Image (cartoon, rainbow, N blue to C red; front, side, top):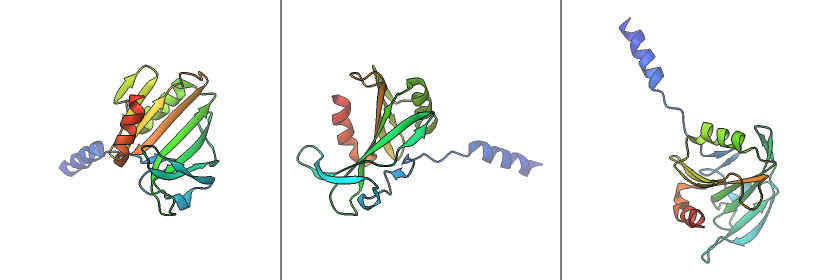
Length: 156
C-alpha cells in the first residue's frame, strides 16, 4: 500500500515539459534549411545580417488562421531560428490569450495590449490586439539566447 502512495505522489509531481515553439517551428531545433516558404537576406537590426522567411504553411489555432514569418541568424542553411512571428488575422483576443496561457503559462509581464511570456526555452511578446490594427494580433517568439532582441522589442 505504501508503494501505491509513492506512485500517486510521483504522478502528482510530474511536470509537463515546456514547449519550445509552435507547430513545426522550434527555437531549439529549426534551421534555415527547414523553412518551407521563401527566404531572403535581411538585416536583423543593429547591423546583424540574417534571413527573413515568409509564406510558411498557415495553421489554425482556436478557429483563427495563423501565418508564420521566420527570422534566422544568418544565411547559411544551418543558421538558427532567432524569431517566430505568428500573425493572426480575425484575432479573437480571448481565445488567443487562453491558448498562450495553456501553452506558455500566465504572462510574466503586461503593458496595455502587450504581454510577455517566458519559459526555460523561449520568451514571447504578444500584441493582443495590435494597437493600429484591432482585428489582428501578433505573437513574437524568440529563443532565450535572443533576450537582447526581446528587450529591444519590449521597449518599443
